[in-house]
Image 1 (cartoon, each protein chain N blue to C red):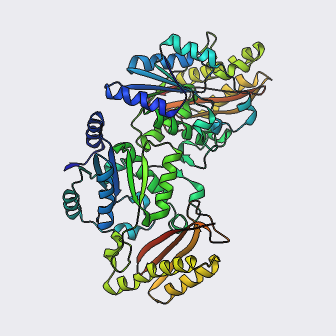
Image 2 (image 1 turned 180 degrees about the horizontal axis):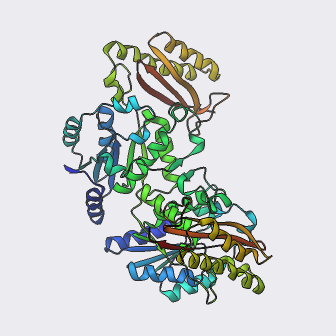
Image 3 (image 1 turned 90 degrees about the horizontal axis):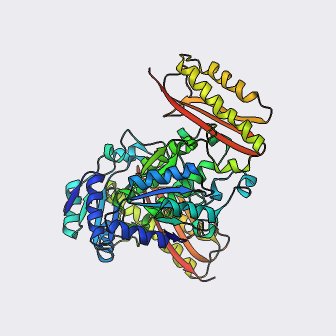
Length: 284
Length: 284
């Protein structure tokens, strides 16, 4: 496994691979890797000839300094996982490499996909995501890039941004990986106590209940939202950030639950913010 | 000379060239080519192995529908010029190719370089420029791209945008080409009558006077601006849009004229808007 710390090293290696006709898959991460990331690596390893993983906790996408300061780090463990999965190259830049002279003054946005959910709860978050993705994609020049659908709005936004700017990279969304009990895997789960982890199961339970009620024929979004909210409200430890049922393609509100649907939840459990979602299709 | 109408054709050819180790130079234009463009082609032909010219009147960067409707077009003549200059490939997309489904909803900006000059006079203009440049750069994937410094703010902005997003393209600014009498070459000059062309010479005359006064030791920007404004005001046919003396690197205002300076003018002559500028260095 090749370890690179500068964009120049990555670019040199990638261009060598491209001269050999190799297709490059890319999984950008913020480290503290778990089975969800490993699934993205597997997707890339099976679709591309060479797989690159980047590990960089991107300060530009944190609106909450405490969240950034406490973001878990485990570089040694991450590298071991990448090695064991047979990742071809790990890009491990430092802040000065990613943002020489500090976070730059630039505005990147797809306004119609940034009107609700995390875009509103975390002002500036997605602008920082689009910045780091733009820089990473230009360093790595991947043919494919893989993102987990746990961060559904992020996935949709990156896909649309790359299509709009015509990045020569295919953005591929991958299904959320969950614990046996249903908790969506996230690096932030490491900050939960055992009892908080137990409470957090209510998030996926609410989503599954919402889904089953929609599948049973209920088309009123307000009713479904109330049913889901009751589940989350049953724990005093859960503070709701948002709970929305939207068109999964446009992120627009719906009068009737038909078509491609997104059920999206964000909660705080103590100081830790967790998000989860499911998508489903209801024939129109 | 290769003529391509789709991004796929361009990309296929460029990737073939890259496999042969060729460096690619790119000159994006809006057509109605003149000697200023030809000079950019020469720069590219001498620096790169292969030179690509795009011709596309970008609707996303026109804030004034009349300006867009009346923008001069001469595709046959443009292709002849490219052929005679030995340009390797011309990319001639149509609107549907460049913006399938219409101009997309996206926001691209470098706020600190978009606070004055054309960014204020032409709201939305540079956002449209950054969009088309992003798409073109991703289609062409050039090693070098060449821009005239007549559009100085555009050049600075594109250079900064590409650096900020880490496009793997070196953005190169080239000196403004002028008529014998001093008029900065522009496709829009074609819309001027002979007498309007005569009046338009006052623009470069004002710039040269400002420069000589600064070189003679005057450091007060207000005084220099007044001297220049008198030149422009001497014609009743000239309507001033802006006249500014700024730091040429940051586009910030100055209390004293020292360092790298930009003298920038925009005027209307009849319905035609013309811009011009010069840069100079005054030791601090």
